Image 1 (tube, rainbow, N blue to C red):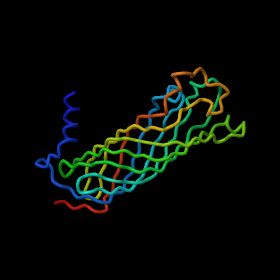
Image 2: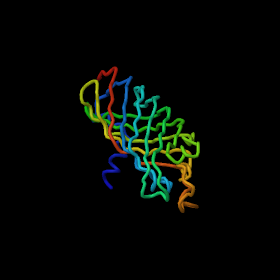
Image 3: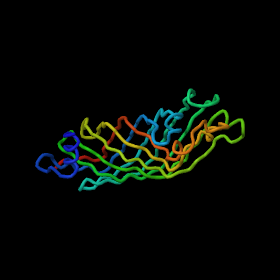
Image 4: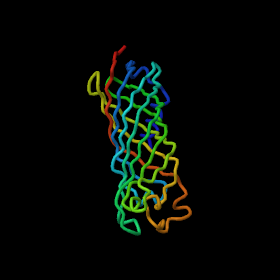
Length: 214
């Protein structure tokens, strides 16, 4: 528990006596994570996340706050052991987003970034069953949000790598029928009332177009 309080303190207090001021403005970022389905019980059981990738430009102000814009792609495959009838395919999800965040350098090599990506997503369920009924893909559009915390390690003055932990949320309720299944397989009531969500864990890369230290 103590380590969590320590991280919280780092976020609240600037620690100017501990860190140099690192003036970084323009950044290109790439995040590559593994999504783990959660929240909606049907989504958690049936859909298995394979990849969640986003790329975006970010501008950081002198006080550490940053703004960014980019695109994201995610793919979920189907757990064939959790569906009542054979089905193959998966979910392709694309999104455009804006990012609002805050970044703090504690020394020349270590920093934390907390931010939220939010935007609009288009989700395509491409399966053999949807194809057989002429509804392939089954499309769902939704609001998308992704709060995340990153631990950044500088490789040199122009590049850095980071550990990424976040949670993706999509404003739609997943139903097994979206895969073309003739039944929801017993997922009713509380098992399907929650919006689709997934835990994200992975790594990121940043390239800094300008980097001067004061």
